[in-house]
Image (cartoon, rainbow, N blue to C red):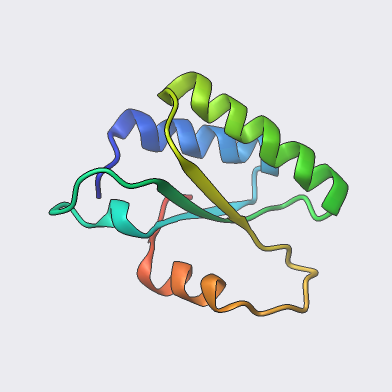
Length: 102
């Protein structure tokens, strides 16, 4: 996994702060492969918060915090509300192939 201990800690803290203490987060995509270089940070988050309007605000605040603490990096966040009936393939792929951070 190509994230530092500090970066993982920053992500965990941010997820809890902005999405709730019972939220879960996975890193997926190219950052899992130690042989590659570069690439964005792909995060899949199952938030405690469920209100769509609040989630948009939480996502923006979370990304602002990540950029402030980790520098300007490309960070993609996929959110899945528990109340959502949609089962997108990215949800399954992120959980099956990703590394759970929280």
